[in-house]
Image (tube, rainbow, N blue to C red; front, side):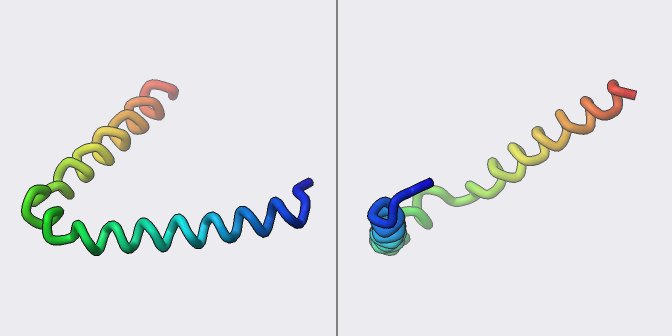
Length: 62
């Protein structure tokens, strides 16, 4: 399906991208802790909302 060159490029790209993201995150870690306190609450609310939608879907389906 993919050529050997395409697979090699994909692997190298993924490794380089993940490395760059880790380096960028480490540089900004102090700023994230300062400006984004309590951000996990928004994520939990989002997951609760999606779960609520699934519950509504299954309750009204039967």
